[in-house]
Amino acid sequence: MGHQLCYLGLAVDPRTHRVIVLSAIDNLMKGQAAQAVQCLNIMMGWDETLGLPQLSFYP
Image 1: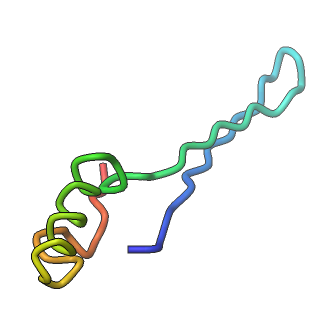
Image 2: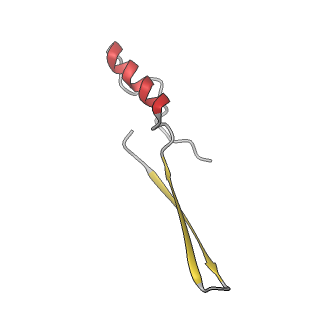
């Protein structure tokens, strides 16, 4: 659960001759809901990743 992805997109604006770069960090399953499941697992003595997907969702 320590992997993160960064998606990069780029485009060239032919009018200004500038490169436009967009980036988005994939933090799916790193939010509060996943954190709550992880904390419950720890409190109950279960495997920390129980009930959490091992692979990230891909749009």
